[in-house]
Image (cartoon, rainbow, N blue to C red):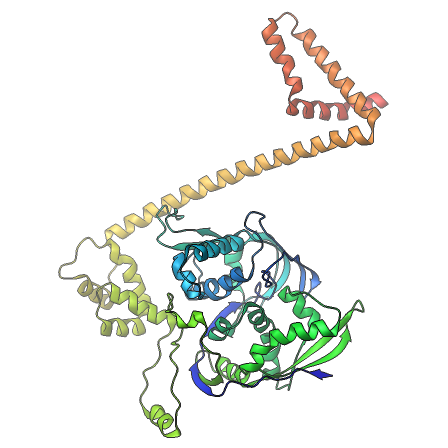
Length: 525
């Protein structure tokens, strides 16, 4: 057994709020992106890692989703999906390309905005062919067998599904993806830690955290992950020799050893089911992993003492999206200061949903004190009245005063709201009928095209594989042409030429081929 050298830890620990993100466990456990900076990697699992089949295809125009597309998915899109709540809406607002650049730690430049735009299109056009089983939030299991893309992208200024103009970049979740996200179990991860890691180390954290969490839960001293499974799930190159493995994994493990997620890494040489060299990677959880475990078991976002990475460029910039927990560091200079801080009465932290509701009420001219009171005490009525508010014809005094009375007294929907909803429902039905009609027409055209291609292929193969039969078919065509010439011999030359010309069209050739095939057994007999 060999062990990796442990780099010196950062000189001090801090008590910081653990900013948690909950991600679905159905699709995220399988590889979706190329983590390496260059090259194309085939992503295909067959009876591996719990998948009967997992294959990711990409559009040749936009390319394979790479490291930037991975960061975009895991740090921005997953966060916005989580913040949207359940039931999950189809439309997810991301923000402008400039905001996305800043949040990813990129300078707001034309080049970087173009790169982010390309990464969005890479993610949107990547297709998943899946045959997997996953666990729902009610602990039942579901088998998913589907070929799908996850979402579509609407850029600022483009048309939204409701006909309006997009004021930012939006995602439109595709039906299968929306359904999986809505019903799959989720698991917590340390969001700020993920942001500080490079793509390869971040993907390792997502993969290994399953085993590390289980080891801490069952009080095992070490977690185990095979090198081959890691390579399969991370799209990293799998090496057959120890020298390459050691160098490759040292770079991946280094941030986690330095910042206390792992305390020790050990290796055991073994072989996989096909007899190829493999290694069991054994991880002793570090103080940060233990802190995460205690926080997650205790109910989510809590202040924990942990080794903290140095702020990355992304962390140093202002966040365009509100995080789910404050990122302010709590000072711990001396025991006396810590005791004084603890003795201070601390206000109960707001949940992300409540904080967002307070801001929406304040934006609608309700004073902040009342907004806090109502958002905590009756959030459902607050949301109902906010939905009605744009349809109120006039306010006797002010919008804020009306909103306060409406929440307290439970006003019903105004006339304009009811009318608008009826119009929206009628428009929705009309869109659905139109989309259904277009889908049927497209399916019909696709079936016709597929049938035509199949017949053309049969004719082509007949010419190569059975020249004698192909000559017979050509003779049949000429024979049918002669019948038409006889049939229309008394017509004008122009009409007769037009009728005979149909024999030169691909469609007529396919029809004659079908008729010839049907008549052939009778002739042979």
